[in-house]
Length: 283
Image (cartoon, rainbow, N blue to C red; front, side, top):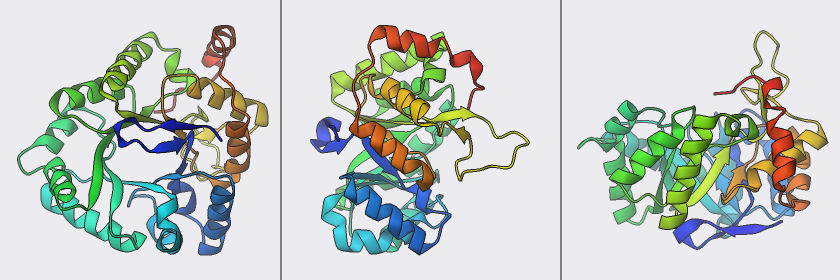
């Protein structure tokens, strides 16, 4: 599987980052099988959060044995200093590790939330203190929704983050305003050597009234052709990696597509963008 430099961290991340939400709502036995698959395919970067059900507990036995094989990123969605610090320490304990490679402000979706994180008693201060103490090496920010690129551009104006995580798929890219802001964000990230990860590569439609067939909170593309086309589109943009979907049943097709990856030319990208209106927007 192709590897790309994760910004100034220097880590050569596989183009698929394992999204550990996939092991959060399942048994340890199912999680073990998933981690065996992840390791078999050489994935070397994990993204996890305390809000992902029991994902931290499921990963713990693996990280205790194989910590040196993974670049480990965790995050907090809490906005206050004390609560964010307490959650960070709890995550270390549940994951059975001494340090993170990356710790991130999680799901900062609006400028108001960004202000909360940057407050004198906000969560960013707690993360920076943890970095100073050697509990994390790098500091990042993640955002969801239509405002994500604009929020992250403002975040980079205020602080020199080491990594970004935001939504990038062909549906979002087909929106002129979103694409403009995302391109500006990626330009700034490249200039500053900031690592970039993306989510929702395989988001198709909302579940609506339909009973979910996967653990993902959106209906995903699960046909091999669209799994591959969606990934090829995302990885053809100037990013480091795409985070895998939140259900391990989708992993075999995703990993196979990643190992076959070849960039999409402009004509192929235009063809996929022309199909965007077939699908509903997933925030």
